[in-house]
Each structure stands twice: as structure tokens, then as C-alpha cells.
Figure 1 (cartoon, helix red, strand yellow):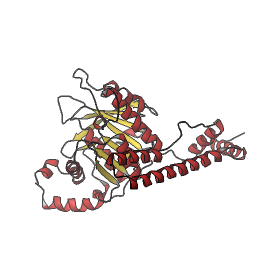
Figure 2: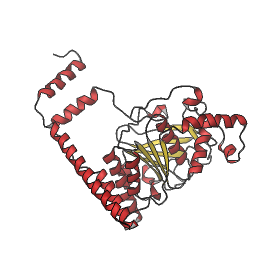
Figure 3: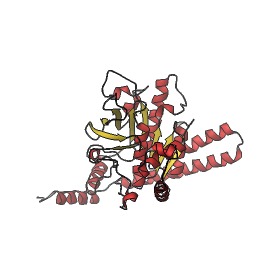
Figure 4: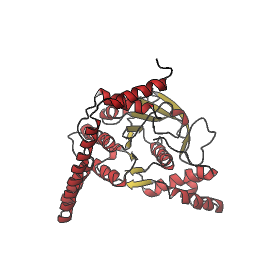
Length: 358
């Protein structure tokens, strides 16, 4: 006879604790695999020191990256272990990735290792959205890597500072800033320079290159702008190349517990008001691999500066929904209906940074 759920849960946990289990075998096996991976990487490092051939060096670096991500092809979990894990999760709050649009946090449940697709047509604002997400997550303490395939470091910095300073980006491009703007920029730069946010010029990179950099830097979250520009390593057709890239990015996330967000182009359709998941460019594998697919589109196709639809088109752990966002093109910021204008960073308000749950 149990009076409440806590009493029932405590009883089940006690029962499982006194039941013989082979759980430690799993831990021992993990340690053995780690030692094997270390030995492989050390052997590869010695080979790197001995070779003078650049092509061979790249091959060895790929082998080292593969060894660092080494994991079993399958994981066998008995029901007893599954039940122990289930009640352990119930005993503490679940850890989910937070989003800068509060209304979405009750619908989108992303965790370390998830593969997320952000799709949009050209010039809708997917890079601006990705940068806003990246800086939000880095301000919350996560180590973020932004792999840029088409936007250089100067343009990215201009966009970021326009949002941080609350000035129109064209003022920055023309050098039309006041003394107060310069003072504000100096104050903000002290905070921005401390963010765990790294921009990587990814032109010409393959997935193996992205994986290696992710392992070296120890990123918690990576954003790739954008997936179709990743240099393919193999594939007879473009669809096959993109499918292999998609599967490799998903494997990267799962093997390293890094959340991977890849931006993707959408096929244009003038007859359709809002895009569907079927319009992801060049491969159906993208929608199959992703845990979450977000589509960004214009609410009114004739108004490039108007509102955007932030549509959750695939959601493994929640329902399909959407939010209507306002877009400030000058400051390159999106914001939802809770704000009359884009919120400024916490350091500009003298407040404290918000902790992230993931």
C-alpha cells in the first residue's frame, strides 16, 4: 500500500538496488574500449611524426578521429537496467536544450547528441537565426562551434555586434557610429570576448574535418551553415552524397554527445504558402536522420522584411507546431510576441545570465 508516487518510486529503487545486476560489466567494457582507442590514437600519432606526405597525414588524422569516436555498433540493454535508468531520470529534472523563444520550450525537447535540421529558402534569414541561436546557447554556458561555409568572419562579427549593440548593421558597414556607440561597443566587447563561441571558416571541409575539429575543441553544440556546401567524400549522385553527409553528421552527434544543427536549403515553390519537410534539398535522408526539423519561412512572400514562421515540421519527442516571429533586419534579430522589440543581451541590462538546462 503506497500513499504517494514518491514512496512507490523509492520502493522500486530499493528493490532494484538489492537485485543482483551485471551493470558494472557495462562500465568495465566502456573502460576497455577507451584504453583501446587511446592506444590506437597514440599509434597514429607516432605514424604522423614519421611521415612527410600530406595526403598520408590527412588519412592518419581521419583514422585518429574515427578512433576517438569509437563505439559499439549496438548497445544491448536488459529491462532491469532500463527500469533503473527510467526511475533515475524521474528522480531529477530532465535536461533539455533551451530556446530563445520561450513559447517553443514547451514543445521542443532536444538533448545532447541530437541531429537538428534548420531549413529555409535563400534570403529568408537562416544564417541570422543560426547565429542568434549560437550566441544564445554560448551565453548560457555551452561551448559552441559555428562552421561557416559561405559567410566570412568579418560579416559574422558585423551581424553579431549589430544585435549586441542595438544598432542598424548598415551603420556599422558605413562606419556611421556615434561616440556613444563606440563606448557601448567597447563595453560589450569585454563580455562577448569571453563567450565560449568559436567561428570556423569551413570552406572545403568534409564531415571528417568537422568531426576532428569538434573533438579537438570539445564543443557541446555545433552549427553548420550550411549542409549542402560540405565537401562530399564519396557518392555516385548528389542525393547519395548528401545522404552520406547526413548519416555521418548524425553519427558524429550520437558518438560524441554533441548536439548538431545543420542548416539546409529548401526547394522553391511559388505556389506553396509555407514549406513542408519534403522540400529539403537533394535528399530524403535528411528528414529521416533528424530528430527535429525546423523550417523558417516568410509569413508573406511579398514582404522580405516581414514576419517569419518558425515551424517545427518534425519532432520526435513533441508535437508539430509553429511560432510567428518578428524580424529586425537591421539588427539581424528574431523575437516572439512576448517582446515589443528585440531584447538586448543581459550584460546591457545589468542582469545575470540565464542558466541553460542542458
